Amino acid sequence: MAIRELDRKRIERELTEYCDRVPQHVRHQLRNGFRISGSDVVLFETRPVWDNPTEWMEHPVARFRYNATRELWQLYCQFRDLKWHSYEPLPAAGSFEILLREVDRDPTGIFWG
Image 1: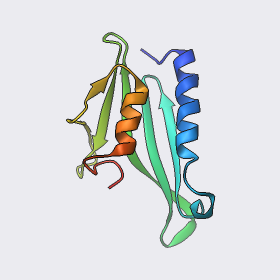
Image 2: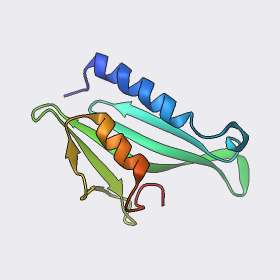
Image 3: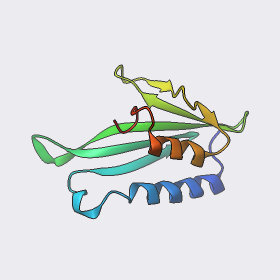
Image 4: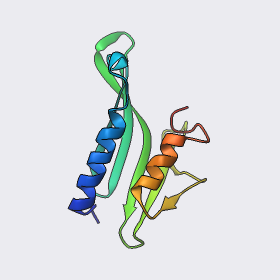
């Protein structure tokens, strides 16, 4: 089931603020963005391709999935195999904001390195 419209707007607002924290003077080298589709939210960073700076490459950071049946948000990280895996230290929470704070804290280094 898709994210409710009111929740979607709140998440869009929160992620827009989160992504805008990248300092203006480095945005020619690094930008953060997000995509919402159905019950999934993907947070990513983009950087210019090394041999073609006019082209930008997307690197996934975190995936959030809303489980409407359980009314929980689930958090996923991407491993070297480029597959999404449940984030073991905090796999689910009752609110999106709790998981976004965990991604920002990144105590394991899996999201931002």
